[in-house]
Every structure is written in structure tokens, then in C-alpha cells.
Length: 106
Length: 151
Image (cartoon, rainbow over all chains, first blue to last red; front, top):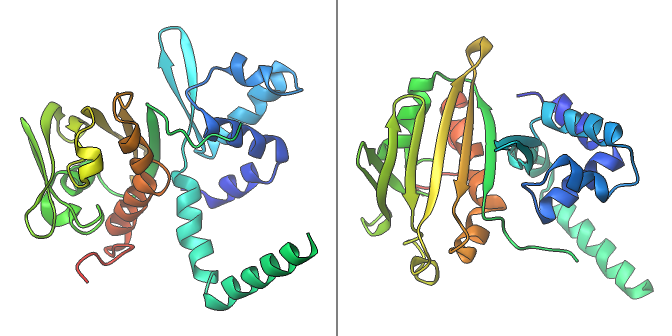
């Protein structure tokens, strides 16, 4: 619904890191997520809140626990709206050239 | 460890500028689903879920577990569209439509009980459900699908 919130949520390395952790395995509690980050519980909560407001994280209650799930639909919508449009052939040709050159220097 | 193991419970959520009734119709009638659901013609009645490919081949055949228009729909899922997935255990798909302010609805899709269907879990994750829901949103809000499956 709100692209700005998604872009803002993604504009922070800790939040991108949280999304990567959830991509690997989601349905996790705050305590589990917190244990993998060098950050206070409050800090993790704050970041999860921003991700939730952007729709990138959805929580489901299971018994007394609140489980955090990654919701990739907003990223898909941004992809369909913003990325597809600009990824014409010439862009991918440049990306290929970059890969080739980087492989050579590696 | 970088994992690409797909989850046994997957959650997808999207805001759609449409009425709950319009979303319900788009989910349950083949004329609509053919335009955003990989071309599948899906009919959902209070007791049966039937999905067909363009030539009438069976892509999905399952029980409807909950049917509460236009709010909640739960049905079984068997991936009969792909022989390598068809033999896996049945999983479950739940649709929840919640009206919001400003003419929007929040649509939540939960695909769970995928423990016995790991290949299906991979197949529906990633671009799977996200593409279907992005296409559904586009169709309802603009009248145009993202991909023309009739071509």
C-alpha cells in the first residue's frame, strides 16, 4: 500500500539483516531473533516494528508465542513496479559485463 | 549456513483496493483465476476445490475445509500440476479477507502443513505466491493482469 514505508524499512542494514535471517527460517520468536543479533531486545523490537509497519514482517500468534514471518509480497510489488521497468536488455548486458570483469580480476 | 529450505508454514499478505466481495469472487471463480493464477481455472464451492489447466487437465483437487464468504476460505492443496510434486502429502491454504479503512482490504494467505510436501513448499515460495498475489492485486485495482496467460 505504501512504497515509502517499504523503501525506508529496507534502507537500514540491521533490518535487511533481520529479513535475511527470516528468509533462512521464519516463524521465529523475538527471543530467537534477538539471540542472533548484537543488540538489545528493545532495539530488535523497534526494528521489527518498522518491518511490520511496512508489511515485510507478519506476526502470527501460536499459543502464548508471537511468531515472526517474512512477507515477501511488498518486495514483489516493488519489483513489479520499479525494477522490471528498468531492467531492459541493456541493463542486464551491463550487469553481465560487470560480472565478467570482476571474475577476471578475482 | 545459507538455507534455501522452504518453510512448512508460509505467510503472505497484501493490501488490495477492492471490496471483500470482489476479492472473494476473484479467488473463487475460474474466469478470474485464469488471469492471474498461472492460467489455472479454479472453481471453489462450499465443499470442493477444483483447479484446471488451460486444456482442462487437473492441476488441483482438494476438499474445502472452511467456506465463509467473503471473509475466510480454507482448502487443501495438492500440486497435481507437476508429476514430481503430485505424490507429496496434501497441504493447506487459508485465505483471510479483512476490510480496512479507505476502500482497502487486507488479504492474508497462509500456506501451511507443508511438512510432508517439501518440493511443493519450494515451488510455492519465492516467486510462487508473491507473483499470484501481485497479479491478483493488479487485476483488481487496474483491471489488467501482470502477465497475459491467454497468450
